Amino acid sequence: MTKHAPPAEALRQEGFAFVPAAEMRARLEAVGSLADWQAFAASWDDLGLDTYMADGGRYRKRRHAVFAVSADGIAPQPRQPHYQSRDYNALNGGIERWFEPVRPEIAGGATMQAVLGFCHALFDGLKPSPRWKVEVHQFRIEARRGEAGQPTPEGMHRDGVDYVLVLLIGRSNIQSGETSIHALDGRALGSFTLTDPCDAALVDDGRVMHGVTAVEPLDPTRPGARDVLVVTFKAEG
Image 1 (cartoon, rainbow, N blue to C red):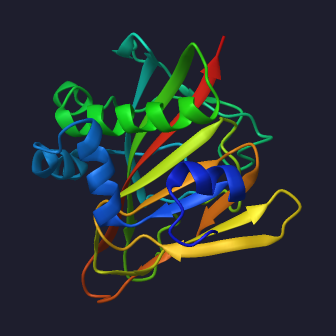
Image 2 (image 1 turned 60 degrees about the vertical axis):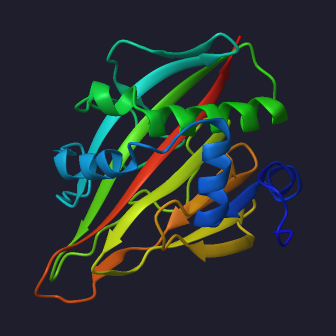
C-alpha cells in the first residue's frame, strides 16, 4: 500500500487501506461528531450471542442494522436478515440469519451517523450510486482459556458487497488479530493489526479478499475480547 496515501487513493491503487486512529478520528469529525463515543463503545457490552456459527463456536456476539444511504441522507430500514451466499461464506452462508438489532440510540447517534457519512462520501466518490444498501454489524469476538476467538471463521474471504469498513472499537486482554489482505489469485498484498480504538481497515470487496487471525487471551485466567464495527456498502440502482 502506498505509504501515507489518503484512503481514496489507497483504495484506487491497492484495493485496501489502513487508516490509523488519529487520522480516522479526524476524518470522522470532519463529517460529523464523536460526542457519544463513550456510550457508543459501551454498547458492545450489550450484544447477543451469534447462534448461527456452523463451527459450533460460542465466541461471537453481535447486533445488526440496515440503512439506505443516498444524497438524500441516511435512512434506517426495517429489521431484516443478514444473508450471504455460500460463494462468499462457505461456513455460515446460504441461510437467512436474524440478529438482534443495533439499539436505536446507537444507530441514530452521532458516532454512527459520522461513520456512515464518512463511508458514503468516500465510497460514492469512488463508485457513484443513487442509493446504497448499508449493513452495520457490531461484533465482539471473545477469547478464553482453551478457546481462541475467530474474527473471520470463514477464513480469507469476500463479503459480496462493494466496500467494507472495519473500525476497531476496543481490545482487551488479547493478542494477535492480524488482518491480511490477498489478491483474488491468492497473492498476499499486505497485513496490519488494528490495535487502537478508531484504527480502521477499508476494503474494495470486488478486488481483494481479507481475513483476520484468531485472538487469544494474554492472561489465560481472564477473558479477552476484540470489538469492531463492520460496515458494508452495496450499490443499488
